[in-house]
Length: 487
Ligand code: PHE
Image (cartoon, rainbow, N blue to C red; front, side, top):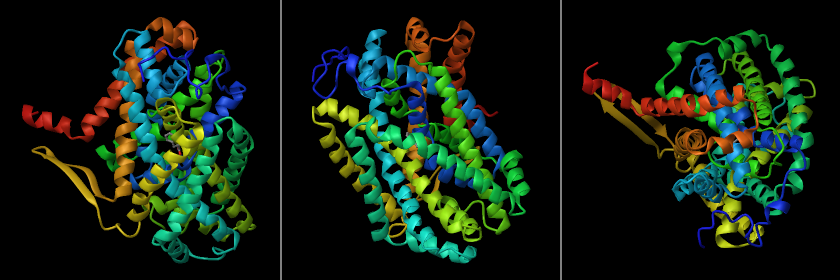
């Protein structure tokens, strides 16, 4: 199709003109939807296990620092670009670039997001499938009275059976695509309004359980006392990558949600609210998991199975554990569901527009593609678990491990969270901070001069510099330069 960056008004049948383009019904709904996107497996499944793999406190501190100094300003920037463009990420970027007199190649940023969304959803859906598989296991009381060994066996039986994993992956993906096919407003708004608060209440109940394990203090110490000797370059990279992942940044999800945002809502307040809730949920998950880990002499570094090995232990020993456990995994599935919808939404809006096909068809085709890709993750835990990649860069200064014994799943996760999302975020920061006319960003953000200056400083200097340094560092480049220069 011809490059119509200003295509809002000459839109196709799929893309209603601005005046009646789908919009959230209120600011609260936007906050809920964006929180729905942000809070997901990233908070409850991924945060605890990568914290455990990276030794606890120091990792958590770096992660929190990244949320505040990179995540929040970039989230504001991404919502802002979305709202100003009011299109799919590819078209939005082209349109905005044209508006400020820059190259249309900025559309590539949207493209990378679309691809990242596909890749992430492919494994996200498999893990969400694990959570679904735990619902009937909890409900039938399978874990009642089991000790660590028994619980571990249940987990390894699950992941070693590809057919089972495929079945759950299929079901979860079907649920996701069914909502997406009906449009974001349909079921999604209603689902988030009451499920999110319910999940929160359940986490509070679990914290009380964790307090009773006798190892609560040890858990908190692990989470909040930084020991920097445990932190590695890769650890810093994954803390930064996780800040992007958990806030759903850098791939257009929040941009698309922003495109449905009414023009009079405050982007800054919405961002702070979302980032706050997201961080709170992650920290609560950590405060639940680690006391259970220590009380049962489990390994914090157990990897992706961590919550599936710890939480059932708690539920299995707790009054009404069957009930709470079942409810917990149901809510976890819902949290994953509201995130997965946003993972594929950029691809859907883009596909509809580019190929001029209906939302339903686009959803179907994307669903099939993601399903196929997901098989790679399914097999990473069984058939192809021995197929691993190790990648190192060696310099005179030392050996830099980029990936170690990574399965295809590990590789996909690394590629998306640690590379594609930060790269997307970096480009968003550069665009919003340096290339977009200040007049436009001020107009969209609509905050006073003081806060605007702080925001501009963060997106112009701090966020890009930090992303670049972490990247270079992770690639061993800094070490390399030092070697060459002999310092
Ligand atoms: N933020 C989601 C989570 O924490 C995952 C996600 C990443 C969703 C990127 C959308 C975009 O689970």
